[in-house]
Amino acid sequence: MEIGISIMLFVAFAVQRSVSKYARRNPKISFDQPTGVYLETEDVTITCTVQAMMISYYDKAFCIYKDNQVLSRSPVSKQRERAMFSIPAFNHGGRYQCGYCSGISQFFSPMSEAVMVTVAEPLRKSVITIDQSTGVYVIGETVTMTCSVTGDDRQKTFNFYKDDALQYSRRLDTNVNTGTLPVAGKRSKVRYQCQYGISIGGRHLTSPKSEAVTVTTRGPLKIPVISLDQTTGVYAAGETINMTCTVTGDNRNKMFYFYKGHQQLSPSPIITNTNSLRFPNTSPSNSGQYQCQYRITFQSRHLDSKLSQAVTVTIADLPEPDISVDSSAVLLGGAVTFNCTSPGDNPAITFYLYREGDVNHDGLKSAASGNNSVTFTIRNIHHSEIGSYTCRYEVLLNGRKLASALSDPVHITVTAYNSTPIRLGPGALIMFGIVIILGIEFNPIKRNKGCKGADTDGVHCLANDDEEATE
Image (cartoon, rainbow, N blue to C red; front, side, top):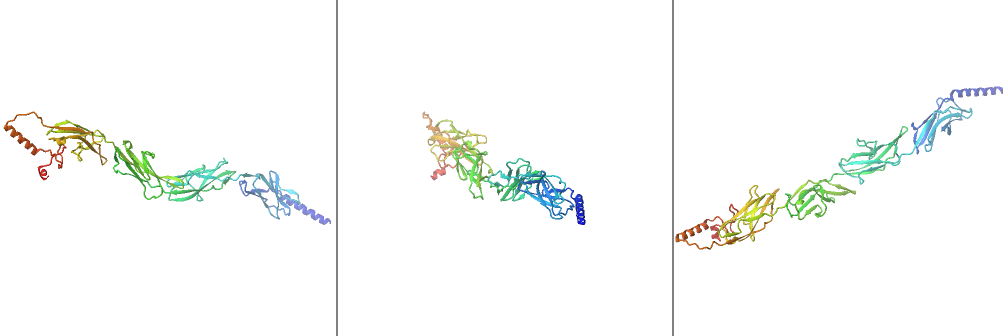
């Protein structure tokens, strides 16, 4: 009996020495997240480890302490040197330590060094927006994206994704929530997302990706062509201008706009009909440069073409010419001279003389360079030339001839020869008759309507003898 008691005391003493030798070593505590930062939705995994732990009692156990209070106890199987604990992070931030103990020997190890658990709220899902709410862009434009987060004023970094691929660009500054990307390539449809990240206690946390926005890329609209019904672009005041805006190879519905000097024209007083524009009753104020463009609507976005090349419209206001006559009463067989003057700034090239009631002009003359008036002379006047005379002129502007209105008329009368009796001898009478015959024979001014030309003074002429004989 005494021998048995002695053996038991020896074993207890040996165990006590063993416990004194190994059990006093400090345990080590660690987390699965080295930074100790967890989201509320995550679990904290704690590991408590003792090196070369030689306690062999079945009832040895590890304990986890939170803020010096036992949080959890874990029995450990024989010869194990570590224990793992898993706790939800929610409401479990604080100061953690661990230790181990034996129920039989009633000993406790020193506590491990303390480590901190920091619990953070989950990051909110960001919202991505683009500057074009319809999501439609034209090749060559720039997409400006904004990643927004509400209720979180911590320092953040931002990332943008295109079809789930992280985008790298000098235009994407991760320190701000706005990024720009050029729209290039061909027609396409892509999805963009964004997310943000923050750093807490050395751990980088990233938010869930935002909902996606879709960007649809379209080719640029074709440039229209503006044209005029008068190819020279020159119109007389009072004429109607017809403009047309044409687009080839695009059958979509369009709206057309016309501009004068880059100012859009309002619908009134002009008249529009699909791609045409009409200016009735024009005046010099309508002169200028005109352009056009068109618009289509795609997925609620209005897309405008570039402006067409400009066409120039010139409205010429040709004032009536002035006509004068050297004498309104002309002796039969005498001569009368008309003067026609163009008072405008545009140099005339040709003048015409008309007798009221005649369909054709009685004479025409080209104006000398730098001269804005000409004279018309009718010699050997006859009673048939009695009447009112007017004139007009023509100008040449950018290849188009424009005619002025007729002048106010001037009236001439033809009176008989002086009726005072003159006594002549037989020889004088014979000589006078010869002169009259010769004058009629060789008179260069022809009056019959068979005349085919005009003399150098621009007056009408008589037909020659052969033509008279023919008639």
